[in-house]
Length: 348
Image 1 (cartoon, rainbow, N blue to C red):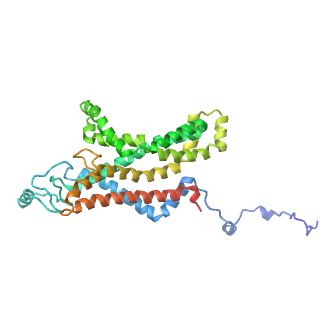
Image 2: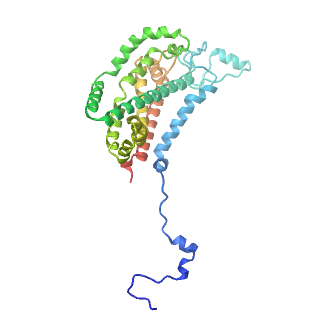
Image 3: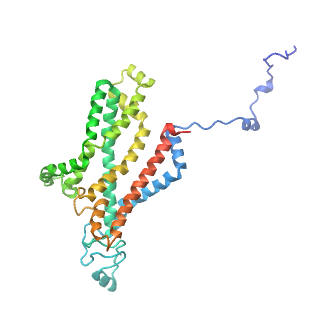
C-alpha cells in the first residue's frame, strides 16, 4: 500500500520505537533547571560581590564583638592601676616591672582610657551592645509592624482608616523627647525592681536603654507597618486567599499562613535595612548621654567620652566612629543585595 505523499500522517516503523541513542539525547534542548524562589534568590545573592563582602564584614564584626571577648584577658570594667591614658601597645610601670621579673603581660592593643581600662575590650563590648540593641529593636519593630500592618490591610474599610490615622499621629511624636521623659518616669519604678530576684540586670543596663526599647516599641514600627500594609493589600485579592476563606480558614490563620508567609522576602529585606537605622539611633542617643548606663560601653558612649581628648588622643574617637560607620555601611550594602536578589520586581 502506497504512502500518500501529501498526507501529514507518516507510516510508523518498528525502528521508531527503539530507545534513543546518546547522540540523540545530547541533541535535545535542555531546559534550565526549575528552582524555588529561595534557591534562585540565594544564587543571585551569591553573585553579588558587594553583598558577599558586606556579609563577610558583618560576620567578622560579630566574631570581634561576641567571641573574642571570651578569650581576651582584660575586662571592660576593670581599672588597671597606673595605666591611665596609655597609648596603643604601651604598658604601665607596674606591668613593665612584671615583664622584667619574667611574667607575661598581654599588651593593650588600643591603649587605655582615662580610667585605666583596656580600650580594645571596651570597643568590643561597645560594638556588642550596639549590635544587640539594633537586633533586638529591629525584632520588636518587625513583630509589631507586621502584625499591625497586616491587620489594617486585611480588614480594610473603617478599620484600615482608623489604624492608619493612628500611624500618622505617631509619626508626629518626637522620639528624643519621649526617651527623656520615659527615662525620668521609669527611673523610680525600675529602681524598685533592681532588688527583686531576677531583675538585677536592670541596674547594669540602665533606665535610658530600657526607655530606648520602649520608644522603639511605641514609635519606630510605623514604617514597617506601612510596608506590610502595602504588600497585604495586593496579596489579599489572590485566589489562594479566596480559596482559604471558602474552606473556612480563620482570619488569623489566613494572615499568618498565607499573607505574611508570601511577603517574607520583603520582610527580610526591610528588616535587614532596619538594623543599621536602629544601631545609628542607639549610637547617637548614647553619644548624647541617653544610652547605656556606665560602666557598660556602647560605640556612641565611647565616642562621647573621647571627644574631650580629641586633640591629645584622637584615636579614641576615630576607632568607635569608624566601627559604627563600617557596621552601618555593611548592613546597608547587604540589605541592598538582599533586595536585588529577592525582590521580584527587580528580576530580569
